[in-house]
Image 1 (cartoon, one colour):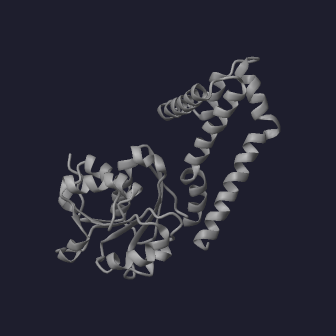
Image 2 (tube, one colour):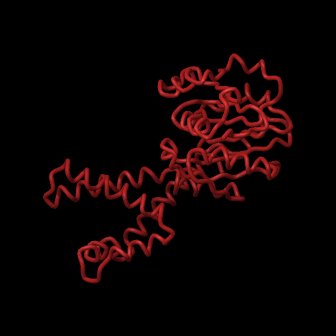
Image 3 (spheres, rainbow, N blue to C red):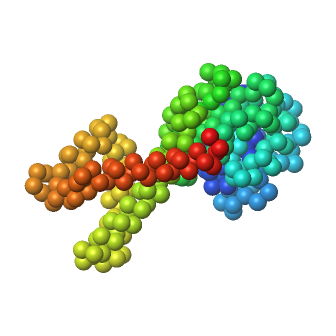
Length: 275
């Protein structure tokens, strides 16, 4: 089924996240003719997708017959001010700017765009690369209901989507979901090392830890039960799981550790975004 857009989409940056979105959108029926790419050196995997679908690149921008429906800003935050203005001049009164650049505020895009431009700031995470991402979006007051729906459809190509009304919450979102995969990967590292300490071969311990976390995540995703209930389902009174949880939950240690970690990440996000 064709993914209908009210006009072409310009993708600025076809790196890992931009490339994942491109692949996800094409898989959902976006016509290659509706896409233009601006990236001087896309990764080989994305370059092959661009070539295979005959997608136009930056040289064709001036040939647009009408303003783009969407400008998807996916370049690195530190070079956004150098790259975005060349695309911003193409924006029309109904163009939606959709940013997936971590830490870049709505205001940082608004200063390059005509007054009244619709801007959505989105925070996806790295599982988007395999279509299992979590994206949280926030739009300015100029985003129409139709544009909000369009942004949701676009980001749904790489996973689940939620919205917040207050942009100040995006630093907390980044701390939980944007940085969150790193916490999970570190959990696997810790479980692997603990297994080795308990006598397991390092390779076997790593295999067990990876599969356990991946399987638990899949179960959590497919279940409508709260995480706490799933945890209780595994925990027999007086059993081995209960013994381990007695350590992890003693004095609220693990919860406190995560609260402190999320607060630190949120604070750093605020510092980087100037909020």
